[in-house]
Length: 185
Image 1 (cartoon, rainbow, N blue to C red):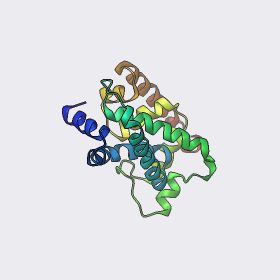
Image 2: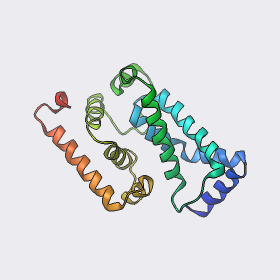
Image 3: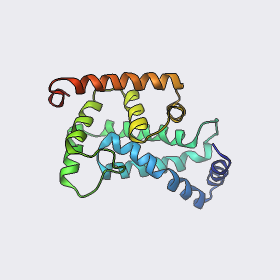
């Protein structure tokens, strides 16, 4: 955590609404993207991102700097918010990425996936990865984070992150290399 972030965090903990707003502005897009790629629904991702920042505000008074980035703290809250959401929702009611692309005028938040087929195939393939592998793939390939950043964000060693990434990529490669991978995923 750099000095400016620490000062901003200290001010937010002391009740400075402007500092809390600046934290929101600094981290909103990263948290939104993280949640969006787990849900594939812009409206729900926006709502859950807001919930993350509400929980952040509630937890700020007791937040202790443990040498990790503040973003790591927000990712931990985000992960819990998504888990809570899935516990309360019937998955069959959720909008798929394909429906989102075909039915709306909104765009992918980072412009990563360019074709409807690849979005659908990627979404299906991601369902076959465990939660840690999904996190690493999204943080690494979608958000473009470094191995070092990811290790800090998910509280794993760099070696463990590389291992998770390797296993996930091998799993995805196997799925995509099948003769009719699109139908089998």
